[in-house]
Amino acid sequence: MTKTLPTGFTELEPFIELWALSTESERLTQRLASTLDELRVYYDVISELAPRALDHLQSFGSEELPENETTLLELLFSLAEIAPAIEMFNSVVEEGVYDPRKITIVHEQMRV
Image (cartoon, rainbow, N blue to C red; front, side, top):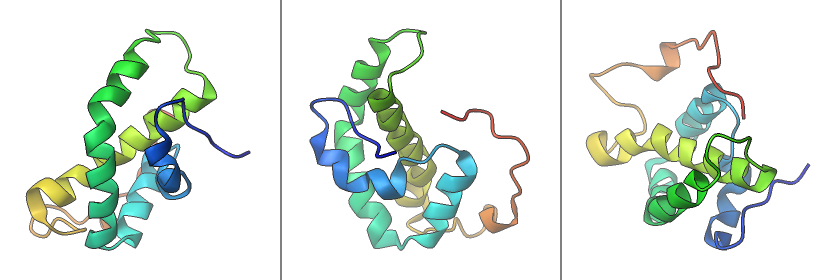
């Protein structure tokens, strides 16, 4: 199934395949497989749109999100995954903090 976005978020379409991921494990794997420059390109686009995306998603309240909105939420989850690498560490792997390659995620909290 091809994932799509809600109207008004076409700028994010090029990132769906790599960053609209359903689980924390998938997002971590993608982060570690990316270069810092690749993370920065995604970060620059998604962080600019994040406030509008959050406002859009909040309009749905606690009801189940439609597929387009789920894709948007997955992209925002990926922003949360990569933000420390860009904002704090300037590195894909946060040296001196923890090595995410040693983490085994045993329970996915949310599979959207």
